[in-house]
Length: 248
Length: 256
Ligand SMILES: Nc1ncnc2c1ncn2[C@@H]1O[C@H](COP(=O)(O)OP(=O)(O)OP(=O)(O)O)[C@@H](O)[C@H]1O
Ligand SMILES: [Mg+2]
Image (tube, rainbow over all chains, first blue to last red; front, top):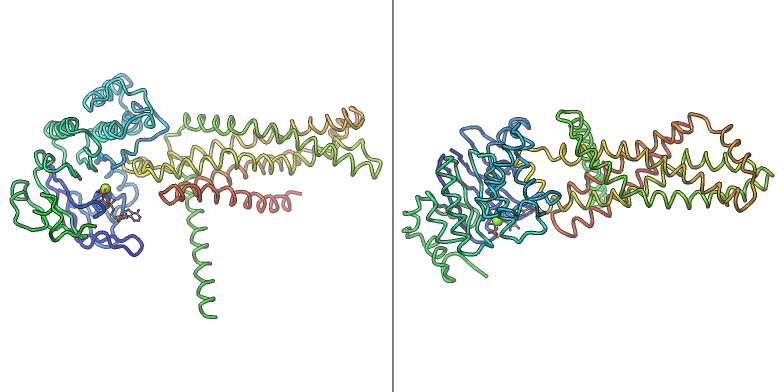
C-alpha cells in the first residue's frame, strides 16, 4: 500500500501540488488522469522520492519515504520499476545494454541467464532483434517500449508508468496495455499508470484518480469513476471544452 | 544603500552555499570512488576517451609551445651570451609551468566541456533520474570513474606535452638558430632536478582533479534545457581555467 498524505509541491512561485491525498492498493493498478501540465509526472516522481514534497508525507508500506536516510532510500527505490515519460534510456549504450543494465548492476545473474531474460523482455514489447541499436536510432514509440522493458526487467514490486502508450499507434497501445495487464497478473505488482489514452486505459485499471488544480478531484474504482456525476470527471472523460476545467 | 547591502549579502551567501555544494559533491565523488564495487571498466573507458580526445591537441599545442619557447628563449638568452642554456630554460619552463597548465587548458577545452555537456544532457533527458530510480548512485556511476580516469590521464598527457615541447624547442634552437645539440641536452641534464619533475606532476594531477570536478559538477546541476546545458558548458570551462591558474599560483609559491 502506498499512501500519499497532504503532499504540497511548488517550483519557484508555481504551486503544482496543493495537498494531494491518494492511496494505491497493493497488487492493483491505479491510473492517474488529468490535463496536460497538471502535475501528474511531478506526483509520480514523489512516489519513489525522486522529488521530495515541500509538505506532506508518502508512506510505502507504512514507511515514510520522505524521511529515509540515503542507504534506506536506495534500498526502497530498488523495489520500484519506472517508465519515464521520455523513456530516459542511457544513450551511451545499446537497447540491449539498457535493459540489461539494472540486472548487471544490481544482481549476480549469470551472463546467459541475463541474456535470455533481456531478450524475452524485448520480445514482449515487440523489439526483438533491435537490441543492437542505440536509443538515438529508435523512434519515440520504440524508445518508450524499450523503457518499458527496462522498467519490468527486475520484476519489481511496484511499477510506475508515465504515459506508457503516448506516441504509440492504437494497435500497439492495446498491445502495451495487454502487456501491462499480463505482467501485472503474473507478478502481482502494484501499478501506477499515468495516461491520456482514455478510455482504453480503463480496461486495465482497477482504480482511477483524476488530478485537477493540484488536488485529487476524485478517486474511485474504475466502474464507479466512469459513472461518476462529478462534472470535472465527466468533462474530462468526454473531452468537452465547456465545463469546470478551464482550457486555453 | 540598504538594498545594496542586502544585495551584496545575498550574492555572497549564494556563492558560499554554491561553493559548499561543490565541495560536498567532490567529497562524495571521492568517497564513492573507494567504495566497492570498483568500476574498472568505466575507468578504462574514460581514460581512453580523455586520452584519445585530447592527445592530438596536446601534441600540436605542445609542439608549437616548444618551438615558440625555442625562439623566445634564444632571444632572451643571447642578451647574456647564454644561448647554450636554451635546453635548460625550455625544459624548466615546460616541466614546471607551461606543460601542466597548457595541457590542462587543452583537456578542459576538449574533454571537460564535453563532460559538462554530456552530463547536462543526461540531466535534461532524465537519465540521471533514471539512474536514481534504478537505485544506482549517479555520482558513483558517472562522476567517480571520470575523476579517477582524469587523475591517470592528465599526468600522462602532460608528460607527452613536455616531451614534444622539448623537441619543439630543440628543433628551433638547434636546427634553426644554431645552438649546439650537445649543450642543449647537457644544460638540461645538469639543471633539471627531481623537484622540477615532481612539482609538474603534482600540478597535472591536481589540474586533472579540478577539471573533472568542475565540469562534472556544472553538468550534473545544469538546468534541464538546451540553454541550461550550453550555459553549464561555458561556465565549466571558464571556472576551470580560473581555478587552474589560481591553484597554479598557489602550488608554485609553495613548491618553488
Ligand atoms: N523540475 C521542475 N522545475 C520547475 N517546474 C517544473 C518542474 N517539473 C515540473 N514543473 C512544472 O510543474 C507542472 C506540472 O508538470 P508535470 O510534468 O507534472 O505535468 P504533467 O501532468 O505530467 O503533464 P503531461 O501530461 O503533459 O506530461 C508544469 O507546469 C511544469 O512547468
Ligand atoms: Mg507528464
